[in-house]
Length: 59
View 1 (tube, rainbow, N blue to C red):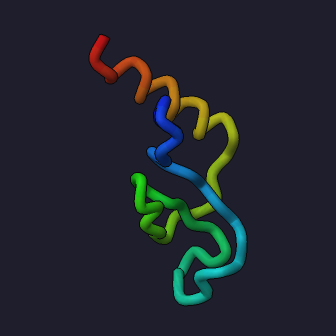
View 2: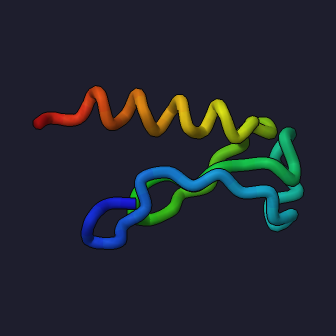
View 3: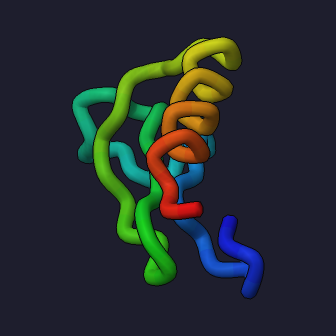
């Protein structure tokens, strides 16, 4: 989330998108939390994504 409480990315396994081939796994992107199919992800991979995002952000 951003400092003003907007979603950047959120991984989710709530079964509310049965049409996704990765059901129940998916993620939400951006402040509008647009859902997209996404396979199950390990916590270590989430941390790696966060670290890469921090490293890539402007200082």
